[in-house]
Length: 251
Image (cartoon, rainbow, N blue to C red):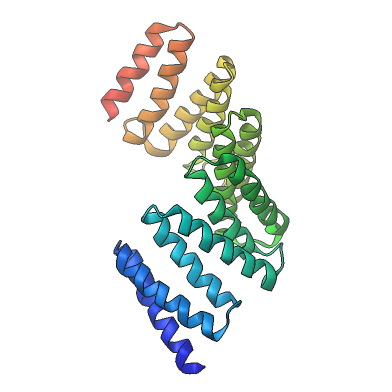
């Protein structure tokens, strides 16, 4: 048993290294071997799920979506059985499966998986450290973007506000990436033709980014572009031109 364990760990580690080096064919070969070995040792154990998650990364990189879906489902099944349905690792597997569907425009299948994953994290967030809170912010923003893809802009706005609250709680009001949250909320208003509300958030995004990076930083170009498209829609051509020129100057 110890020999088999050392063998699968060796192939798995080498597979992870090949994956990090973008050598996906080599990674697939190594990880497939690791999977066969670990399944002999413990067919429904968490080590199997670990190798399956690595294979998911490989298959996604190779655009082998059928295989990616299969290994994600297997990993999810194992983790649910061993850890229970509310474990953080189950939430991770749910997101990975959701992303497979999302990247293939199967948003109806992706949404409930992503929602369940976020709910798991939210329920456990009271005990989160800094790293886990950051992951919660990322997952919250991810579901918001998924809602936006489906035209569910009010639900997206709610989650972007939640993301902003989490970032403010963790990093403070001057957190440099807060401008992205402002811009995202502005996008949800823009999509609903609520231009005055969008203007307020786009301006807040620009001001915050200028304070964080300085007025001449290239990152601010996107904030000027947001205001330019907004003023164009509002018929304020002079302001649209002004912000377009500012964006071009910064690129």
